[in-house]
Image 1 (cartoon, rainbow, N blue to C red):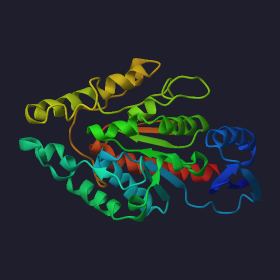
Image 2 (image 1 turned 90 degrees about the horizontal axis):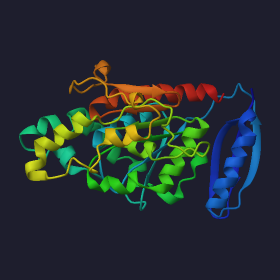
Image 3 (image 1 turned 135 degrees about the vertical axis):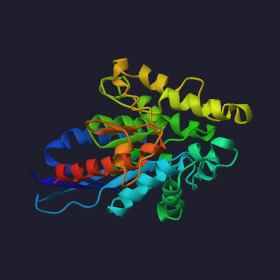
Length: 313
C-alpha cells in the first residue's frame, strides 16, 4: 500500500507531519482540523504519494519532561537506546528550558544508609550524563509548541519529587497522550509516567485511555518502602501524592486485575540481564514499574518502533 507524506504550513510554524497510510488519511485530516482550531493555526496540506518501496525516515519520538524532579535512569536509558538506533528524539519542557534531574536520585545525597538501593546505578547515571549533553536535552520545546501529528511515538519517564506535578497534571500533555493512544501510535510510560497516561482521556470513549487495557506502574509496596526508609528526615519526598501510584492507576482501569504489579525482586536489569526487568505491553502501549526495568523497557519500546516502521511502509 502507498504511503502519503504530509507537508503542512501554519501561519507561524512550518510543520512536517510525517508518513501516513493512504487508507488512514480521512480520519487523520479530521484530527488535524481539531488541533488546528485549538491552536488557532490555519493549516494547508500538500500531499505526496510515495511508493511502498521507499524506505521510511527514522521515527520521531516525543520525550516530555517536567521542569525538575525526573528520574535520570528512566529518561536517560530509553533516550540512549533510541538514539543509538537512529530515531529522532524531541524533548519538551514546561518553559522550553532544560529540565533539572532529581539530584537526590542522581547523586544519592540525603538517602542515608539506603543510598545504594535508592539512587541511580552506574549505567543509569552514565546514560543520563550522555543525555544531558545532547542537543535535544539542552534545546527543548515548550509544551505548547508540541504539534502531536509530527510525532510517531511518545515516551513518558517518571520521577517522584514534587517538581513532577506540573508534568503529570498538564492538560496539554494529557490531550496529546490521549490522541496518540486513540490513533494507535506507540506510547511508553515508566513509573510515575503511567499516572499521566491514566489521566489522559480517550476522545472516543471519554474514559481514561487505560480503561480496558492492562498496565503496570510503580507498585505500592515499592513506593511505601522507599518512603518508610527515608521519611524520618525526608518526610513525604517519596510520596508525590497522598494516593499511591498503584491506587490511582487502578482507579482508571476497567478491572482492578488489569493492574500487574510484577515480581517482588528489587534487582535492577541491565543490557545483559534484561530478564530482571518487567514490562507490560498491551497493543501500542508499553508500561514499566521503576528504574530497575529501564533497559528492558527501552529494548521493548525500540522493538515497537521497528514494528511501527514496518506498519507505515
